[in-house]
Amino acid sequence: ANARELRSLCFTISKLPEIKDVLSCAKSKLLVEINNNIDSLIDIETLIDAAIVEEPPISVKEGSIIKHGYDSEIDLLRGDMSSGRDIMAEMERKEKEKTGIPKLKIGYNRVFGYFIEVSNSFKNKVPADYIRKQTLSNCERYITMELKEIEGRVLGAKDRAVQLEYELFCEIRKKVADNLNRIQKTAKAIAKLDVLLSFAITSYENRYIKPIVNNTDKIVLKDSRHPVVEALTQESLFVPNDVVLDTNENMISVITGPNMAGKSTYMRQVAIIVLMTQIGCFVPASYAEVGVVESIFTRVGASDDLASGQSTFMVEMMEVATILKEATQNSLVILDEIGRGTSTYDGLSIAWAVAEYMSDKEKCGAKTLFATHYHELIGLEQKINAHRHHAGTGRKNELSHRQSKEHCLRIVADFSVDLNFH
Image (cartoon, rainbow, N blue to C red; front, side, top):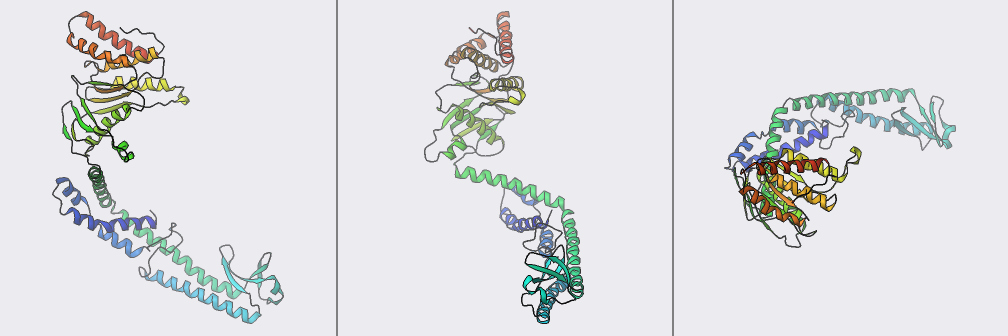
């Protein structure tokens, strides 16, 4: 850490007493715990504030870090440096009088140290004891033995002061670092408080409600809204929607409609509300009952990976294959227009096979929202219901199950295959 970062830490610590004072009134078990984990760190603040100047430089090896009054030796050396500047000013005045050169001046740079500069128009007045050090286009620079002696005293004080400041800064930094566990424990408590405050402000300003969280398989939302879209369309009213999902009669919702009708927004808002619920935030709805899900899978949008030789369609198929492999009855799956990247017939076949596979409890059975332009998929409802009604009635159904899975996996792996769904 440099000096500026220590000052930032000091500024943050200065706010902790006020935060603890506000939290002292809280009755919530979590807020009480957070308050107990916030260390006021007054000793750290006192140390940094007493030692480090308000606006230190970025570098810690060039001085101007330690406050006046913190260390007597540094103050003494700074006095020598200050008087050295006065000595240089007095010497410049005397040299002007002695030589009769009105524009003579004493300057300094890191290469040559202190020097006497005389413009070319007065070179003929330069005394014999001046030693020429550098020639420029419009002037000459000189040194004298007296100037070098004074320089030794002034620069010696500066170098010593800079070195001592760096050593003191390292000591202060180590004292702060020795309290790292206290600082990090407080930082984690403040981070939790920051998240809760963000949740509270967002929920209050946007009229969110407290969801019911349980271990059922249900997701029931009334008047649900997409939090981001709603915030970006404040000039127009966001149209709320209801949602009912479970792993029985409402396992899969097939959503159809024209482009820009809100299919993707509807599905995404369900996933976002489930996520918001499980991170402990209120949600945009008038009523929400959310059974905990173990994972959320999405296949949304279009992208390719040409560097790996994968087209947009191939990327989609790889992602769908991952979902089919990983999703369980405790998952929420969002599928947006599966199969749109190929021919209508193959695309419909893929969409149908995936939806049929997802609806089978023995294979997957995840709560699924499925957006599509293939209106033929509405025929799934009768087929799936009939399939459930006759489940376990013989070899024919078992073969149908296996063939459906084979169709699904084969078409994902080889999208040129010609499948015929009846």
